[in-house]
Image 1: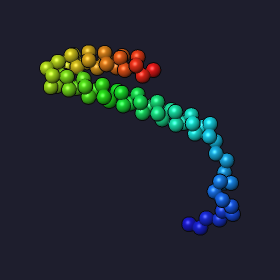
Image 2: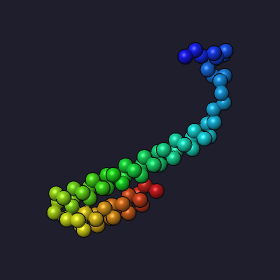
Image 3: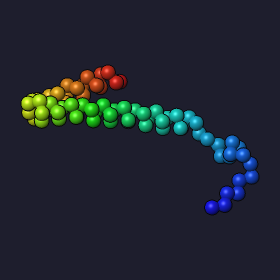
Image 4: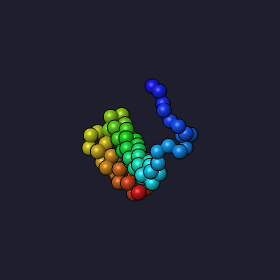
Amino acid sequence: MDNHSTGPIETGAHMDYAEHERTYEKFLTISKWTTMHLVVLMIAMAAGFFGGAGFFGGLIIFIVLNAAGFYLLR
């Protein structure tokens, strides 16, 4: 509970800013791709269940939209 720091926080441990930036970029990349896949999945499920496309129609929509999303987000 007791903090025994003798100076301001700015003079504490050295921060590895390059590693922080790489980690943040990886986090953003994973978030971007995960969001794209989930949105495509929801659209394909809506088309398959409610739009009358059926399983194979939803699967085709899923594959086509994933390919388009991959092309646009890379």
